[in-house]
Length: 244
Ligand SMILES: NC(=O)c1ccc[n+]([C@@H]2O[C@H](COP(=O)([O-])OP(=O)(O)OC[C@H]3O[C@@H](n4cnc5c(N)ncnc54)[C@H](OP(=O)(O)O)[C@@H]3O)[C@@H](O)[C@H]2O)c1
Image 1: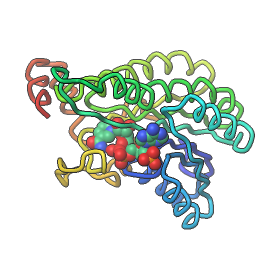
Image 2: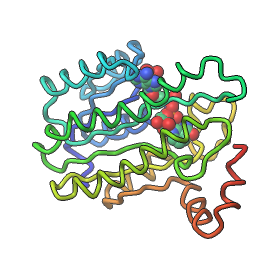
Image 3: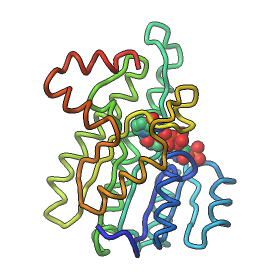
């Protein structure tokens, strides 16, 4: 895929991985439409980058999601790359899950339903532009789960299998579907668990190389080895991440 002259819609461009990918594409000569709830970060990104447009949207809310779709359709119909990146992770015990219903809705809506609905609504826009691509940011936890975040793992496993099936369907229309599977990355989402091993910038380096080579499933860092181990010795791989 080409690295210049694209127009990208990136959800969750206000922090971590989404922000790093947005900045890299801006630096390479692309236009970026970035979303998030944080108005001040969106305004700051817009001030710092002439080709960045921020749209505030809360992906938990169907109304906000619909408004985002309408704004993109009406004002940014040139997008050829959709990066479904926004995500949240709740960690709690199901033995004492008093507020579980709210958290289940939040995680599934942001991590799974919003990417599916955004993709469904924007495929016609993507298809009308050259070199259309959908990129879904899932996780190594889509393959091997950890006990502390069952709903997060379920949402990412859903996004993983969705990406695969959608790829088969959209290839006939010339739309590429890519999936990025990061391991633990040092971002605000993983505060307190930082390893210094993989950062949003190191992920972006690996993603850009794979993107350029049209790779469809992009294993970041240790994810590749984990998936290989999971194929050969699934119980061993499960035990490694179980308490992660
Ligand atoms: N960090 C890791 O170790 C890791 C590993 C595997 C996969 N991932 C995935 O990578 C993606 C990015 O995560 P990150 O680590 O960069 O996390 P992050 O720094 O916490 O950023 C999350 C982004 O999602 C947006 N977001 C969260 N809730 C939202 C909502 N209700 N509506 C709209 N936007 C919302 C946030 O924007 P606002 O706060 O402005 O709303 C923010 O821009 C996620 O899908 C995550 O699951 C991360």
